[in-house]
Image 1: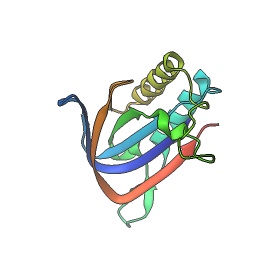
Image 2: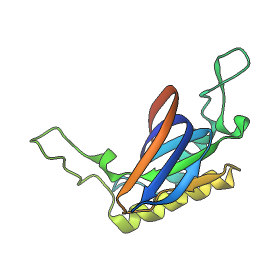
Image 3: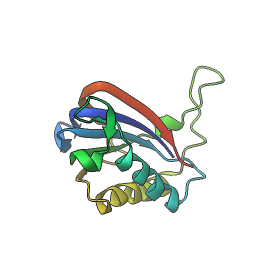
Image 4: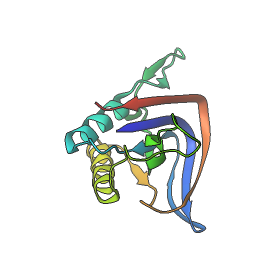
Length: 146
């Protein structure tokens, strides 16, 4: 699994003009699932993200987690994160998990975030989505699991 994690003031996702997910301050997570990923990896990545200390404390240091600031999380499935652009001009997506498997692991990730006590919104799997966000910082990290 690979995740692009962005600290946001707010974020939303729409499908065909309908808003399907919105959060206030917290994290936008673009999540890619690979062919080799398993269920435990979704839970482990969720735990890493909700405990990641990328929010400022009173001294202005990145020392607080999403849980500590009581932030929200918007998870958007994005298979293109697994795109291999090393050859030619068209990305290869052979490393991405098949849709049914990717959807199940995406749902496992979201369930683990919610089980940790974080309010989580989602996009719509396999839909053409418009994602809007107001970056905070900006703070953007790329995490992979394992």
